Length: 115
Image (cartoon, rainbow, N blue to C red; front, side, top):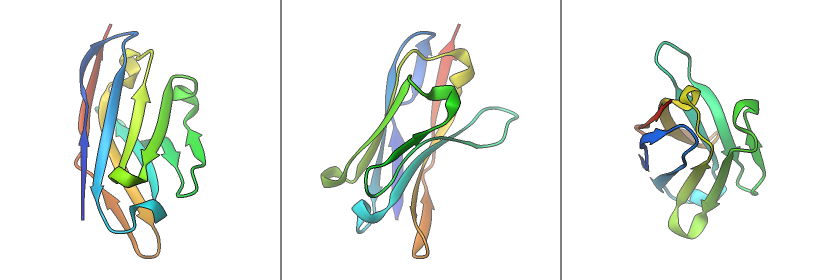
């Protein structure tokens, strides 16, 4: 099982990035997918999630700015991030959850937002 996150980079405040996480996982459509992030010196936090049924949820800090989506045909989950702020700087991780069968993590992609 492998979750490959990509799309991170350096962007100015107010800019946009689109993260992708491609999962080499069977029955991808049955997994709940979540983006987390971890800033330096801080705990990992949930950013956005999308269930197998398509229901989405967001951290208050990103509501209205970030959009999570999934393409089950491509085994990929996306995170569209708009109006980025310096406090969004973090390593972003994707997570695939199909408990009790398994929970899987990607390697992370770094997002840096300059002021």
